[in-house]
Image (tube, rainbow, N blue to C red; front, side, top):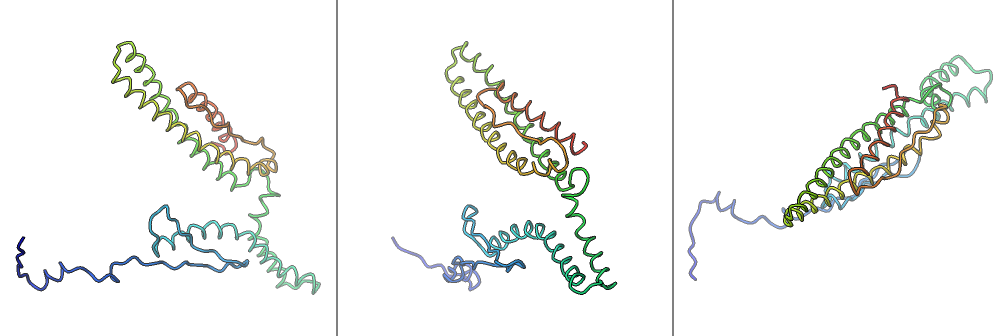
Length: 247
């Protein structure tokens, strides 16, 4: 088979030419670390579930770790800030006005942290977590109701298809019913992590003198009645949360 060379302009030829391998080869991103004020380091995570890592993905993996860490360090740093003037007051009595001013300023920063154990009522951060859990449970209840309605409709349609002897439609409906059960199983499995968080909040419920809020275990997903039983139990939990957060 003969080939034919067609002359083209230099700009078009440049566009058609393959780029050198170094220009198109994948880069190997270097890990990123941050030294912590309390010792140790945070390191970026190579999350292969998100594809081939890049500098951007490694950077964002570190940022996601940094936010919770900075929030958790607020109270320990406030305590450390208070220790300095307290040491001065103890080792060089009587404390000077400057030392007293530093102690008072540090105590103001530490006050929100002390409110967790000595304050009245439910700590604000517990209220915020309960509100977040309420939003998640609200979404879960809405989705479970939708799937329960679907499964109820499938059950009726399957019964009608059996009466009519429509095997093709029956197979299609049973397949759809199985998919709905799979979706319900996935939704039920999301209850466990939420229940674990509520379990970690029990000490704070005790400090606030309120009854612990617990979630029911994952319910059945074999039919609409089983799902509606789970929905009813979750709605009771929503009412208990509303009684605490005042909504």
